[in-house]
Length: 382
Ligand SMILES: Cc1cc2nc3c(=O)[nH]c(=O)nc-3n(C[C@H](O)[C@H](O)[C@H](O)COP(=O)(O)OP(=O)(O)OC[C@H]3O[C@@H](n4cnc5c(N)ncnc54)[C@H](O)[C@@H]3O)c2cc1C
Image 1 (cartoon, protein in one colour):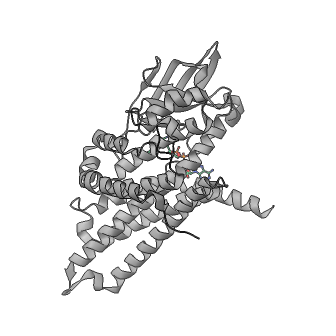
Image 2: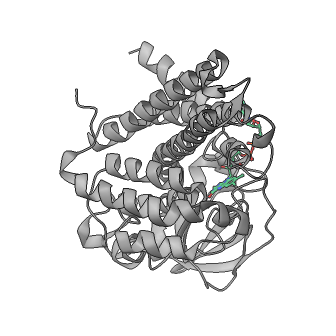
Image 3: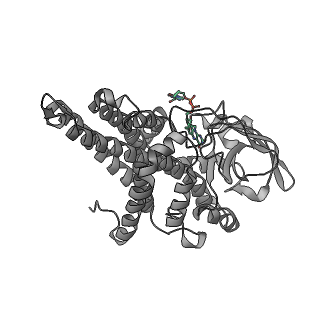
């Protein structure tokens, strides 16, 4: 068993590390506080080829593996969690085009996404349809060579900046999930506009506006996969997205752990650095163990995907375990900082607020446990 990342790509990892340490990390706090899309980070990622890591070269990508993509996602999130969230959301748009798109769709939409000319977004969630994807009410009615979309979506990550959106709408709302269809919708399509956007407790550099469709005409050529095939597109996209969320959570948890260790070495009480107290050491030990376990689960999910093997269950395990690890690690890192951890002087209070998101997006922890349990029970019946 080889637990190393692909050695052929050692140079690439070194470059990614430099980019993260020299560009993303020093600006991370400012990026989070400013609460605006960090175009300078986006341009840097585009230049480094990080926006098309597992995309074939003919579509503008770097033709690396999903394991490489996961490793890059962890590093980006570790250096700047806001940029990590933008990175993960972008791939939710690329993946379904790569997997289900026609050659024409890939040339038209995937190339500008993989090269970073356009930002991508994927939207399923609606005011009445969150965990229950089958409840999507945004309608799509066929009219000649077009579909007419009507309805609204909420929480669209990258929504304010995206040029290309994957929109899951329903051709036959009475049939629930069986009517779902995936469309590629371009920014500027008449009848499609952004709605309101709520301020969040963290991740405000990531935009999450409402999307409104009013008689929005989308060419039939923009249907992904096939009419009424949208549930499959959504499920497969979210499964890969769970790996993206898992590595994002690992990156954040590692950052919290590193800052806790650093602080414990600097802070003295009772005449000793607090790192010498067993209570602090136990917290560090638990944080480090959980982060390592979360990383291994996440990497295993990506590796299974590269091997062409079933990965949905492990991706759900990685997502639930990594996101809960990020929350527990952020809580402990804040505790290690004592009262100073509660101030905005240190990053740990932000990590504490940010970590919570991982337990919610792309399927809550409850939904992940349902996915895991249903797979485990099904396997036991084989
Ligand atoms: C910052 C942010 C970014 C987001 N980005 C995107 C995006 O880019 N694209 C997109 O499509 N969506 C996005 N979302 C939406 C996100 O995926 C949903 O919020 C999430 O799936 C949960 O849906 P909900 O908020 O409607 O909660 P609900 O589904 O209403 O759930 C509420 C609670 O009930 C629980 N629950 C629901 N059903 C069950 C059940 N059957 N059994 C047990 N418990 C259950 C949930 O676990 C949760 O605790 C984003 C959300 C946020 C906050």
